[in-house]
Image 1 (spheres, rainbow, N blue to C red):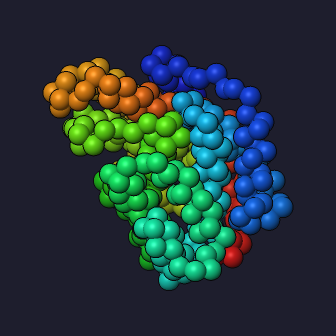
Image 2: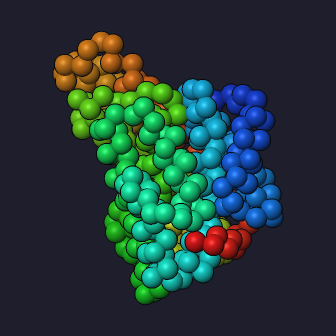
Amino acid sequence: MNDLFAEMFDLFIPPVALPDLEHVRRHHQEWIEQHGIADHETSRVLLAAAPHVCAGYCYPLAQDGGAELAADFVGWLCLFDDVFDGPVGERPDQAGRVVSELLAVVRDAPPPDLSPFARALSSLWQRSSAGRSAHWRFRAANVWADYLNAQVIEVRNRHAGIRPGVEDYRVLRRESGASPVALDMAEAVGGFEVPPTVWQDPVIQGMREIAINVINDVQDVLSLAKEEATGDVHNIVLVMESVHGDSRSHVLSQVSAKVRGEIDAFLLKEAQLPHVCAANGLPAALHRPVALYAESLRALMRGNYDWYRSTTRLNYAGTTIDSGI
């Protein structure tokens, strides 16, 4: 199953060469300990999954301090996901309280006495939004809010025994997966920003949506065994099997074909970017951030695949943590 996407990625989006990331790993370990979001054993398991390697794969354009920010972001997401695989994920009311505190952080209105996870998120938010425009902060905060609120929806679904249909699942997955947040993080760690004048252009938004879809589908296929082991029905393969009654091999073939089509469409849209910049009257000096964004989306699609193939994170299904939140 892990080779389902190998040929298409190797053909269309080559892998990046990883730099030496030992200093990033050390920083990330210190950051986890500083914020108290994992005990010794949980920290050991997380570091073995190599969030710093994910950062290297997914954010090759990272500028000074960007790789460290990216690693902390990935590690936080992993631990937060594990929180919702535990008791919090079975209690809608508690999940709502957890998310409410985190929402206040990205809305720049944090309450006093933040929980460890909220303090860690505050660190991520402050570092990623420093020097960003008001436009970026507004849209990034909304994306974080969508992601956090979607966690509560998934908890309510599980609690009520609701199995979403294919389209309902895809809509929820676009928000409950951290892909949109990861795309915004690419600008923060790379030290660039897509100009507001072209942000809403259908070509750029289309590329963004494609990247999110590809990342989500690849993650769902490669994490399928983990989701089955934990009884989580929020996976496109399981949803398609349940709704259509198709065999697993047929569903995997369908997902693979969809990802291939999405990558083809992405590359066609990317070729239109010079016209997009010109049509929106973007000065030549501002074309570069648009090109960097496209490069970052490609890196995220490819890097997500490479890390998911190599990480031990998928090998410890059922591991949960007591977050104290």
